[in-house]
Length: 404
Ligand SMILES: [Zn+2]
Ligand SMILES: [Zn+2]
Ligand SMILES: [Zn+2]
Image 1 (cartoon, rainbow, N blue to C red):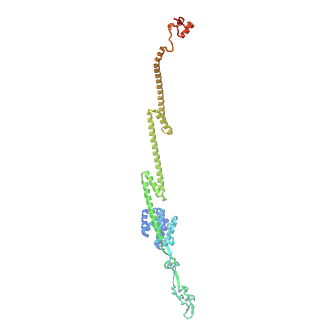
Image 2: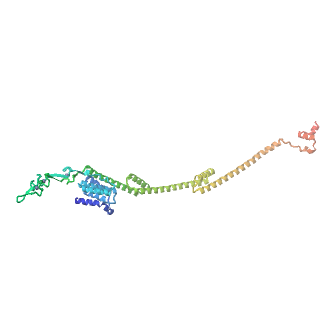
Image 3: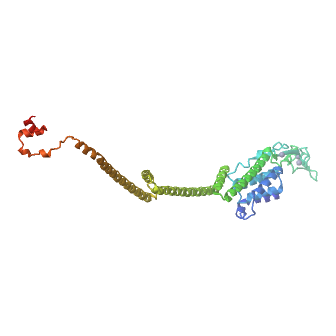
């Protein structure tokens, strides 16, 4: 492993232990990360921007979504730099640190490794045996299996043990060595489009998240700083609706709930005030009825009010007013009766006065009762039957007795 790779993998390994002190680390801004991602979209291996990704992935105060994506993108950048070992190590750490995001790094070995064309995937390459130079014979005994000693006697060749074949290639003339291209791994680095696509997708995703974070933050601050409660409520409702996908809406929801409760209380207070004002206007109008000349409709209005407002605070006052007006009405009616009675009496007297002379005149003019001739009066007990009969017939008994 290259020294640089060791350093980087060590940095990534420290993500866990770095979180404790990262809270106090330099302030991170979404704007800075967004800018870095946009630069990396154009220049995938820009050093300073890659460092920004690493910094973001290590800051525990950052959103987990941004930390995970920064780390994933940084890991894939190793592939773009041709370091598959560093990539595999970093990808493994990413999986351990963010187990919920296994799909962020979507590339597998097939996406960045290809079969070595040089060794055709065997990992080996065939070369002429450097010992026998392709003869297949033992170099020491030239293939005889024997060596001549100084005294001229034959001795067995110690190199090939009398076989006479090259001990290095076992007589095959060629030997197999690890492929110099793939170094015996059978595969060579060959990045497919998927690697770049995965990298760019992560960067695009981060740009969008940063923008969303900044928009949310701006709109939330605008809502919090709005002085008009009604406008503040509308801003919070719009915020929650627009950013419904976000997991950090709890403070906004809590603030909205508080606003709604406040506005309910204000509305209730206003409504109560309006009711009080209305009741005040009503009682003023009822008080004015006291001066009303026409008591009957006034009394009807007061009765209707009492029936319609059984719980009104003005009940006692209205009841007193009603009692007063009813008394007033009764008094008026009594006066009216007396007036009518007096009038009738006066009328009767006048009538009598008018009729009386008529009656008297009629009687004088020889009506039904005949005037008695007092000169001719005599005690009825002394009258003879003839006289009584004559009196009844209004005839002079003397005349009867003495007809002329
Ligand atoms: Zn050989
Ligand atoms: Zn030999
Ligand atoms: Zn090879």
